[in-house]
Length: 150
Image (tube, rainbow, N blue to C red):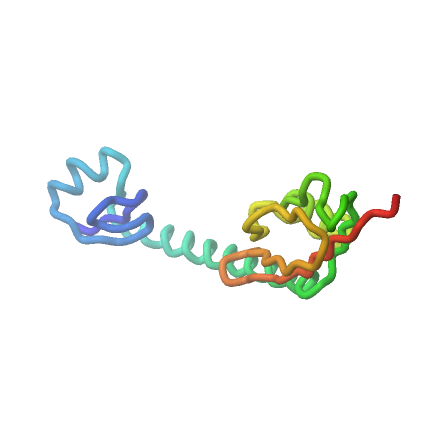
């Protein structure tokens, strides 16, 4: 019996896979639990259509990520902050601060979790920050931390 998995099933396959299973396992366990549906012509056509839509969505997301990367890649982002002696900041610059500055300077809204910053920035200087916009699309930003005129 062929079934289309509706959820990931350990040792069998992942969602959307078409697998061959024993008749009893499919009819008595997988289908009643909602883990699979029978692989009829109608269900196979529906699966094919869903996969096609998923592929289009992924391509669109990749295209949008590449457009965002073009806007901010190798750009200079200047943050002016209060600093004490020896270039030590009062507080720190976090991914949230960088995301807000990107939004205000370039009009690109980014999730702060996509910004790769090992530790918050606590001193004046130049920093190269990676932004993982999408799997496979990474932009690098030059962050310049300068002392604010008082």
